[in-house]
Image (cartoon, rainbow, N blue to C red; front, side, top):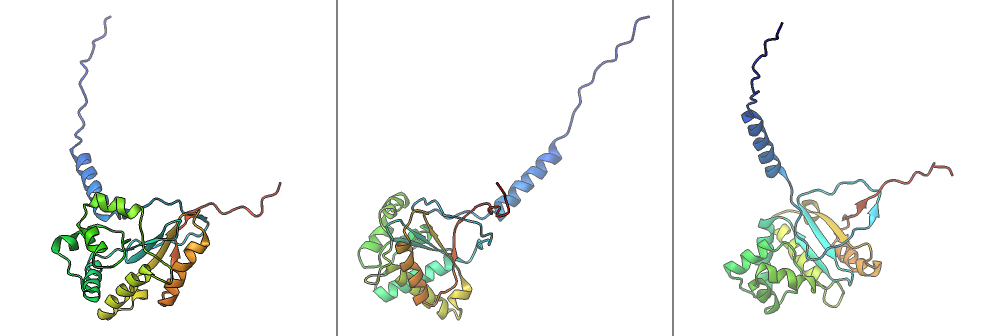
Amino acid sequence: MSKIKQKKHSTFIDMTAMSDVTVLLLTFFMSTATFLPKEPIQVTSPGSVMEIKIPDAFITTILIRPDGKAYVNFDRPNDRRAILNKIGKDYNITFSKDQTNAFLNQPSIGVPINNTTFPKFLDLSLTEQDEYLKTHGLATDSADNQLKTWLTTAINVAREDGEEYAKKYNIAIKADRGTPYDNVAPVISTLQDLHLNRFNLITTLEQMPNLLATN
């Protein structure tokens, strides 16, 4: 007796709901994600077993070159604008609207403050600024401590707003694992001179060694 073959029907799955969920998740992650600021040089942070997480916002990051020059990044745009305005008043420099926008768009500060070099730097394109910063930076020695000048200006801006800089900002120092301590020490001394005695060192998390392991 022959069997009756049933006609196969294709299965249809409506993916509209899943697509909507995917778009919603993508939008959520894009709106809540914190993007790392662009840095002028790449460094390999030293290893550490310390698990203290550095905050993602309200942070001043100081990046130290192997030769001791430094870059500083203030992460709040409104504060950066106020810092630039105060620099202009203190050094009698008038910044154009384009120069101000250039300063706000360049996260790393690594140019000495004077009437010629700094405005000319801001007139460069963003790509030219990035190339310039790779070979320059802020001096941290006692003779011409440009890092201290920028930090002092930021502290004064905070005071004008009735705030205490040490409480307003978290400070993080980032240096390559091959940077000699003698080139890191001036940065730490600068912070101590400004009574900014609480700061973090950015490191790469390593596994805690097993001290109980036996051979």
